[in-house]
Image (cartoon, rainbow, N blue to C red; front, side):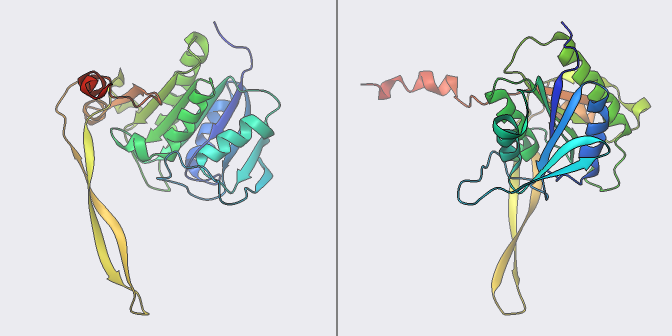
Length: 255
């Protein structure tokens, strides 16, 4: 059943001035009442970090007629503050992004974009994270906006599960070249980290994280497979990280 004029919270991890969040705000404004709470600077790779050893600064701003708050904290801080302090009521939906770059496969663990969405799920609010496979500040978000509108509308009209959390990744393709949408599982993959050792002008050694992402999964039902074939991938995710198979194998530890 459709929700009339739902309150939609828009968050991200690239910062309140990122083009991706502006693109998502434009979509959300056509689907409900929108409030934005986003970091005041880029917070990529923060995962589910929260601020506990420092204060949080929040400044009210205006983004093309939309109420918005710039927050000094992490993406998860933004969701928590929004729900507990800044909003006049609990939102019907949280949308996060549109992220500059992929959050498929294991990247969901590190992603501030998806951690903000998962925090919404923990609060009993359906949440969706959107990512475009393009890191460029000049990325074209037109196709991603069309997909975001389709997914948000479908969730608002059909979803009855308050804990719903969707990880949506959109290939870097023209709208006409996107093959469709696939609901997938998360591909098995990992980062092979390398630390570039350097020396600063003072003679102190420091390290710069580099590396490459390696897919360890040839399944044709994964997000990585779908994206490689030109599809939008949607993976339903949850905060429960219990390994149920190993749980059963550990019965010998019980007393």
